[in-house]
Length: 199
Image (cartoon, rainbow, N blue to C red):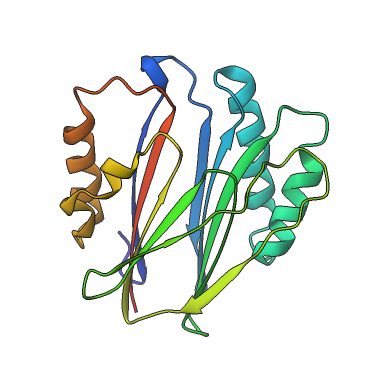
């Protein structure tokens, strides 16, 4: 981790039933003024699902200065004629001390405050495939120390209740999640991204 980074990120990812292709794709980056993380899950599984999720991530990489709303609209346009994907985007604005999040489909986010209280945002229904779709964008204040868990549908409600998700060390969160799920055959592609902001 570089010294000037305000955000630590660690990722667990595993394809369903130990297949070669995982339909989930993700991207995160930090600039001087903000941090952005995106997680996309292509519909279905395998290579075509991976293709759709990578289209989404390509849009994010090419437009990191765009708003969350603009990014989702652009991703939707790029998925026209493809299988489609669900998406979650988290942006942390260091100057405004707030975070913005939106999710279409079954990508979820947990926001965890300094006291360990979890707040789960409810995703918008549906998926992106080139059709107009209304969606909401959530903006909330950012505490001095805030943690987030972004996850795809391979992460279950039981997984989300595990105590280790409250750990402030994102690398330990991911390692403990890997150990916890080691003996489980996942029926969905699984991605869990642990994020820790230190203002």
